[in-house]
Image (cartoon, rainbow, N blue to C red):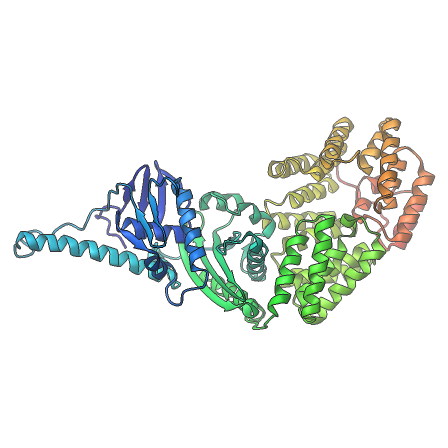
Length: 631
């Protein structure tokens, strides 16, 4: 630790200051984000300004021990990131010069840290001038040795900026998207999959609040500083790291950072065969839990200590499936299903592939398919996944969604939701889906609590912020709902569903013109002529021509892809065509094609006392007593 009376050891060059002890780089006093390996290279170069630092010396400092086969790619990537931080150029360098095939040299004028003060004459015998020159040279060599030792320790799993500074309390954590050092953009799916796996494993630790993937994705290749990220996500610590893959070997380097202070707490490197990647992921999660001093329960220890192997080709296909699934487009879901099936064919015992396939089939609405074409397949795939591994939280949540949306098995769905959230209490999507279920079965106050929990775990997810707004509408807290939806629009100003929920809040406030305007905005953003609820509001507002135009647009759309009869029924209700509306609702009942959340919204409020609607709810085994919002 640096003594209080000693000056800060800072290198100065150009507009920059660099403090080796903390790894902090500043430009004109403003901190510049610099990751681990570029920081280590900069330290190495600054210790020897004007001298050649060979590629071999850099390898020994950054990747001690056995050299990974992708060293060249990793070093080139680290140098590029260093130049980006310094706003430098490889063609016309101001700071870092490349000597082809040999190494690098720092070419700018450097003001080095002051050397320790020379002993006074009273402390040591006087020496000739030659001895003084030797003393200074020795001091320089010693400083360099310390730098290299620090680099070597950090690469071996220790961390340099002050592990001795005392413990910190960490109750919440975010895993930023890992950085791909492979140098091949086609490997993005693999690196994203490693990030997702670590989030999933850490999320099973009840003692930690773990931010969901949706909210951390936007920080991929970000230059935001850690304290700002911590404030955005409301977390105590952040994990960031790098992934290098070569053939069937993978190397992962992760570091834990106390985010509010940008203080590094822990770092470690793992290298494994790809077939052992599941064990690597569990080992990494256990190490992070230990580093933040979270006590693991026995069942959490068992889950994270599993040593199952996976066929590399099956795992690769699974990750590609998840990559395309995350696009949530018809084309993406089609490719996702292909890759999940490919993974299952290679390894029929790999449970996550079945869970992924269930999630794909479950989104039949996105694909424009009839429920009976997809939902039974979604249920079968989820049950197969659970038969292979009943600890998969996502598979329990997938099964729950099928059970209530398609089978109307409300009790079975709740049981599966609770199992899912017991296994993974940090599963933001699980809390979000459970909130919708609770709205559907007329338990809106519980739904608000679940939606709030989902937002805590994924504060930057547009859909979770919007659906929290929707639950607030159902309990009559319209002003609060409007404020909440505006938070979602700050994240994504073009999110059409946000305006649809805003319309429901405005309607609750009694401002129908603003509700219609919000729905028109949603229609313009979606690129469609208008949705069913815009048609409904046009109808109840006396704008019959516009309502009929939306009915015609729905008809045209239904010729190309499946459209639930419920959408047509909603527009007819707005036009006052109750007989046509109930005939269409019966058709939706026969096809099991309800968007069940609609039955806890304006449609239910309007029809709640109608015997025909009550009979429909009874047959679906839903509560028939109207759950009216408060004043």
